[in-house]
Length: 104
Image (cartoon, one colour):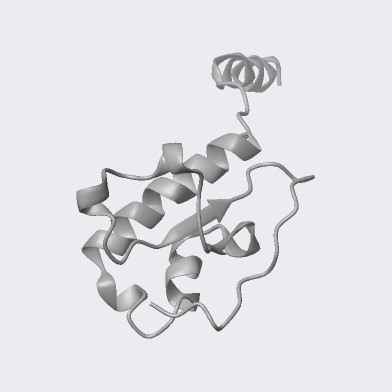
């Protein structure tokens, strides 16, 4: 009995701390997945945004927006057929739902 208790306590002592990702980390990870998915798997967005949004794992936390701040834009030469996404990484952030009128 004492051996089992000792083994159990040693197991607990060696176990790493439980780590929960912050909302910001979840948002950033989803953004990276989104970039990879957009470039490496165009089939995920060619017929609509729903499969792409699903692949990011962010669901309603992300959606298309019509524009972004000028400072966030790429150089003018690269501003062709760009799509702009907003990812809310805070539970209290507001976001309007994705609209079907935004087509790629």
